[in-house]
Amino acid sequence: MTPQIRDGRPSDTVQAYSLIRASLPCLILTEQHMRWRLAHPVPGTQDTRLVAVVGDTVVGHLLSRLRTHEDGTRTGRSYLGALAESHRTAELAEQLLAASEASLIEKGANILRANSAQEGVQAGGGCFDQAARKRGYEVEEEHHVLGLDLSGLPNRPETPEGFELRRMSDFDDPRPLYELDKACDEDEPGESDEFAPYEFWLNSIWENPLIDLDISLVVTHEGVPVSFSAYMSDQDTRVGSAMTGTQREYRGRGLAKCAKISALHRARERGLRHAYTENHVSNQPMLAINDRLGYEAVGVERFHVRRLSA
Image (cartoon, rainbow, N blue to C red; front, side, top):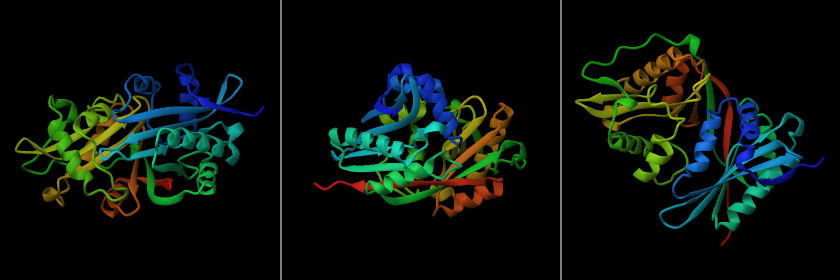
């Protein structure tokens, strides 16, 4: 039977989550988060979860998101898709991508972006890569996706003298962490975009149930946050790096490495077993840190772009 593409429904969540978890082994996600996001949409965005169904069975999934920027432009993104093993074809991947495009263009998207990844990151990722290229997308940038078995962590480092290591959950007021995140993001290589406003950041990051504030660590100097390593977890086996950074004038002192290793030790103590992270191919300092930590390459995620004519 030919799969039919339609908008996802709340009743599809259980099947869609199982499909995503099986297809995207490096993705940190929970069924709880999928339901939470339905009730708490990201400010300034419109999400559509597209599903491919055969009868009542979900065999494909793709998250389509429209973001309206401060200058009024609208960017649409089709995230990493998931296909059931029995339906991993370029044809179905293209049908999902085409449906996502149509929805985004109807909502006024000026620029379309789409993600695909190599097989270790996205089962059937070659199907989505082929679909994106066929539909006129160009590769805009690439990220290395890395994995780490937490049983083989290096020893927990000493916190450098004059600095203090604190859990993110210790901060009643997250505003200083927002400012630090913003400052670090400005130096991140890759796609350029304005940093999220504070209310957006609160909703999409701080209050997101995937962000594990007990594992995530902050390095402070005289009480001021200067470096951090933030993590997501599925409260089961997987933990993923959300962002690691250090304020420019404090770099070169091993602060990010200290926060990162210490946070991973906390994750292991909680029973989590596998850690994943993603770095832009040109981010050599962070790639070097992750190499020393024992991360190994899982695959490459590609970010495609297609700019629409006026």
